[in-house]
Image (cartoon, rainbow, N blue to C red; front, side, top):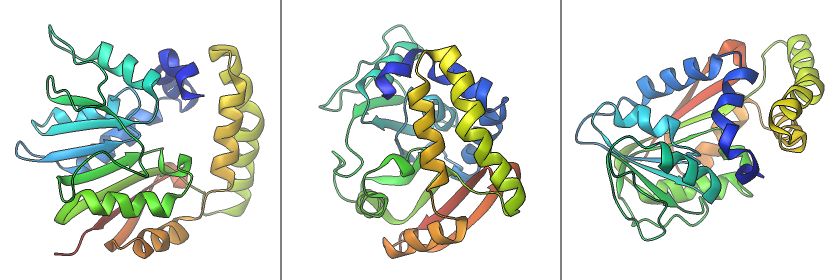
Length: 231
């Protein structure tokens, strides 16, 4: 499904979010707060747009995704004379390294990364709690988790209106722009069934993360959850 929309994925995100995705990405980059010595794992990285934002600070960033189509588009956009290709063996090139991988069985050693982040991908996992536990495995002691995900508006009336927009208007617009309305109908369904901010925080804690808290963006359309691995 994601392979089918890879070429226009970032454009569609801009259009369908009315440009808000750039604001969300900027907030996540500030919360991640990477520095030159950090090694960041960006899971469900898609075309690597968020990964490039992390690498802009000088951090080393691994962009990992299950969709080879998304990774191929991202690798082709990588700046520099010799852009890296998609690799299952971890071939490196540039500040962003593209690696195909399953978030439920990450192809990385224990305690490898300083920061693990996932934006708009956690709800796509077959078992989000298992994915969060796998992220805990590859993070170093006192390392940070940052999860950016669609969420629910605190006011029920507004949330109902938002869900109606997702179920009807969004797939119609996306279908005309991408030719794949089904992919965006799935988006609406997955957001509707996603837990509230407080419930997701509890799922993250249950996976072993500590100091879990969250921040709403755009009235709760999106929430950013953060946590840490204990020493």
